[in-house]
Image 1 (spheres, rainbow, N blue to C red):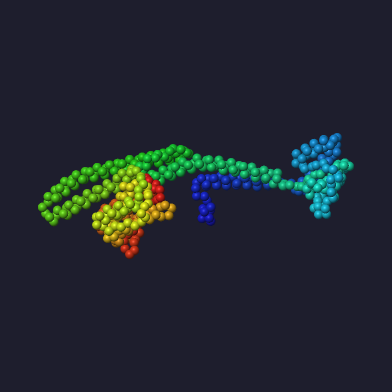
Image 2: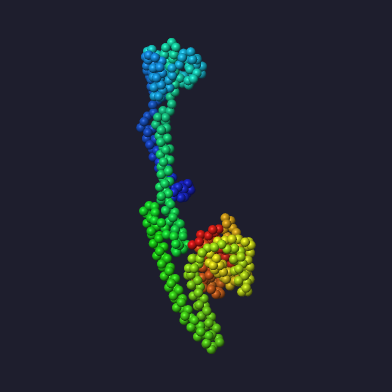
Length: 445
């Protein structure tokens, strides 16, 4: 039951608020209508007919008492304005009723008009221009009074129909007002959502969330701006601290390398130099991961196939079997240096553990783009596919050689800052397939 109700519930806050306003209005008006029905009894048809018969008899006497036809016509016009359809017609215009009309005209309340003093009910005659529920009463030797005495509507026409019309007007007015009110609430809330998304991609995003809308949303905007400022300051402090540490480490490492080169033991010296080189690479990769220039690089259009072929050619020049497959031309807007670093890290990871690497570019549906890097190495167990993107994590059981676990972390960070993602899949019969999916228009952060 709850699932059915949830499916009917609108998803957006604006639609939910407008639906709530409309539903509350309908419930209130329905309760008012039910109350009216129970509190005000609708008069019976017989009572209504007796009331109309009395008005016709009274009007007949009034018309007879007028001195001129103009006075009579004015009196009848006033009666029509009061809701009773009456006219003065010539007796020569009347025609006999048909048998069917005579049977249908069986209203006893109007037949009682004949019992009124001075009232001659002409039950068998009718006027061609009148309705089937007309009553003909003789006025004089040349004229008769024709009255349409159809009983119409009852409570519906007197109370509920005006109430229904007012309901529609009120409902439309409330909906229009709720649209304005919802926009006053939802527009700033949507700004908060967009700012939170941008902040999730980059705490250094330059835009500041405007303080507008209701007090609570304005307070959320202030809190988000303050949090962004504090986190950006923390990131700056972290980057400066690590940069200082790396700078302080490089000087003794350089001195240590120079001293090691003068070590006379030919067996010990290469191992020591290798350890020093490994420490230097670790420092460089850590700084590469923390660098901010990839975030500040301006976006520009590139020819993506030429871009990937250049990367493949660089690795081929170093003796690796790296090939490209895909379209010959595909313009794309990105941060070229950052994207080059991401693809290079993925290809470098692939050539370390496989003898052949294939880089494939595929245009996807809705304008998305996939860059796929496949190798024929040992692969990575599916249970570790998410962990390999964590900084400094290495899938040692599958890939033992080199690296410090930052290559894929850097690549994933760059892909996310382009609004894309990276996923891993096992390749048959062996190897790993790394897929980078990029949007048609990157949301650069």
